[in-house]
Image 1 (cartoon, rainbow, N blue to C red):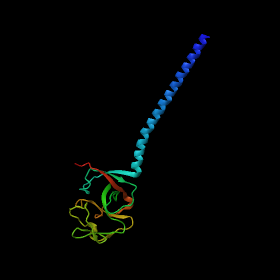
Image 2: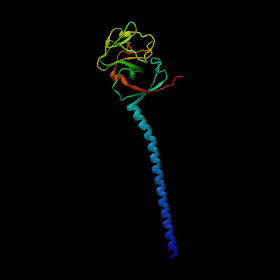
Image 3: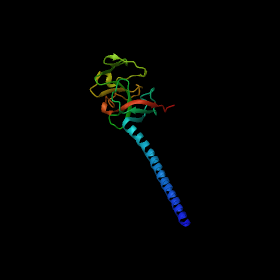
Image 4: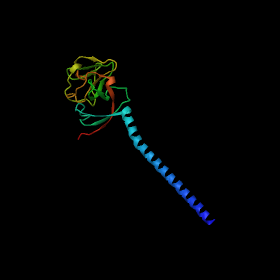
Length: 191
């Protein structure tokens, strides 16, 4: 009888060890799966945010100096579609092989003209903003009034002397469907 009790006790002990081991294995497996999901979900969330809500671009030229320097990284909002005067945008160039960063000066329905004395007129009214360059403002195609159609925007670089913008036929009026978003933040990378 004593031998039978020992055997039952031994069986109970083995059973408890087996259950503990099983719980330990499943606990370890659950922890591994949880960690794996956390590692996979974070990059997926970051990807979705930058694919649909925000974008990142690097300023590649000096056309926006002094406000944006070559090498700066900008974050732009892809969802904002209410573009207005003074907004800095990221857009695809006409040939769609590069991105441009420019400031909106004219919106649909506006008439833009650059006078002989280098004054920008919007609907016949002169503008003067703090971000405007003191450099020479060539008239380009805006020497005669340009009236913007629906979905068209007139853009300038802040550095008037070197900027390739709506004054030039290579850029022209930017079409709304080519605007990727409005710049919301800049990481200053220049010295």
